[in-house]
Image (cartoon, rainbow, N blue to C red; front, top):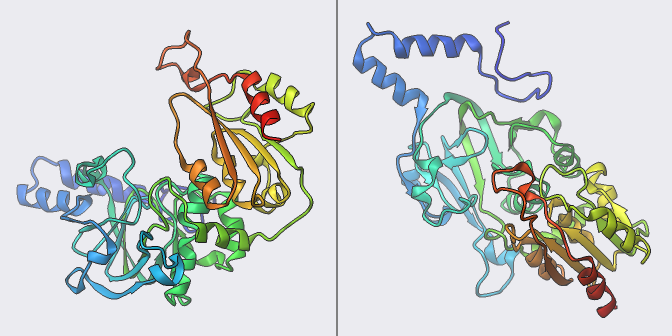
Length: 382
């Protein structure tokens, strides 16, 4: 059997690119004696590019291949006038580009409202819609449900951005399907939650960046809420998947000692001071989702540097108090909004970056926090 760019033994559902296919295509594209028209056709076939943009799923029509459309905004989001639109669209011949980078129609029109284009207010100017990359078209029969997003390899984006789309899909009646689309690399927390949803392992299809995946039917749900915001209904639904309660610690400190970035330089000193006040140091990345949920179930205080581990605030009881320690150059408000959605009391404290480090230094993401200020916030809010 020909070798492939990805190991099927690691990801059995991954769609591989046979090496002989890449060699064949390269030879056809770059042999000087080949007809220029043939080269152009091949380039257009393998170098995918968008042919339009639709700002939201609601704006798609039958001309875009829409077979069915369902608006669940009121049913799931509640009666609020400013609620986020929760739409599900079924597309005939719909495509997913690469590792869940984009969802597009059969005519290659990119659909908005599916994921955020980070740091880009005008999606048409985003690099994903402008660059051309070698991708092999691959058609699969049946109905595919788009669950993951391009950043769902992150615990926060999986648990809150991606997973609640399952509720949207189920409310829309999509209980019979051939595959569920996921990012290329498998993660333990993904599989654990999919097990809770009873998604058969054989129907978990991991999409590879080297392909344009096209399906007979592609079912696309909207984002559960806008970027960095959090919807209360999504929190309640995620909590319902992990009802474990085991009398965990009332005071938790989340460590980032093993993190690759945004490490807290004076964390050891902070941990020592917090432990003397009854805090328990926790490293969520070493725990199952169920154990993380149980650990947060009795929390009254949570202190933590900004990081995906704070996603577990979704499992904390109402009224718990949170102090988030922020890097001066990363003040993303997602956990502030998560705390608000879960009825928690939130405070943040801004750290400082060591002045001796240049911005290009890998250690530039390290920072320090004023420990006396952390203790003041704790004692002043007892």
